[in-house]
Amino acid sequence: MPAVRFTRRFSMAHRLIAEAGSKCAVPHGHNEFVTVTLEPTAEIDFGRANYAASFERLKARWHGFVDGSLDHAFQLNRADPLLAWFREHEPQRLNQVLTVDGDPTTEALVIALWRKLEAILAAEGLPFRLAELAIEETPTNTVLTRGLTEAERAWALGGWCDRADFSINDLLPPETWS
Picture 1 (cartoon, rainbow, N blue to C red):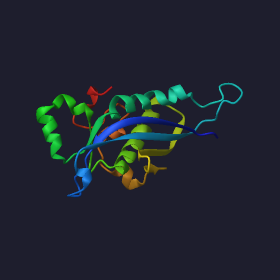
Picture 2: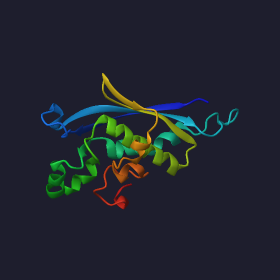
Picture 3: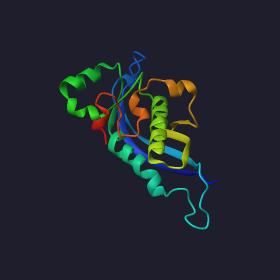
Picture 4: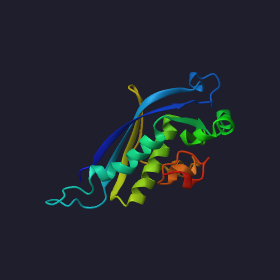
């Protein structure tokens, strides 16, 4: 059955603090592309609609999340001292801070976004399964996955990534997210 693939561009900033002395310990940004491939789990209605769901329906919530929450977010390790700074000095910006357990690497983001998109697909009742998710961090560096291991599913990245809302952290109550 034909699979569908779509891409969305977003800008982000992060810093990685686990390795002392890393050049990535200084906040910096990337313009990234996230590409998802979905395979239908229901039969395509050939001779009538000729698809399992329209691109418009498939992309609506996902693109809303990428554009509304992920774009221009600052990605931080939950243990990063900058998080305390935001809480104290700019709490109104906490909805723009994406947090994960450990450093916010592209590898961590691929896992988090896989789990987020699975939650969105389930909540929207879309007859598709996620087959591949890739993030192009730079023109020469891409991280992709074609599924998650049990350890990746069990990793306490943050409850936000398993909810179908627009949340990118657990610093704010779930009801504050669209």
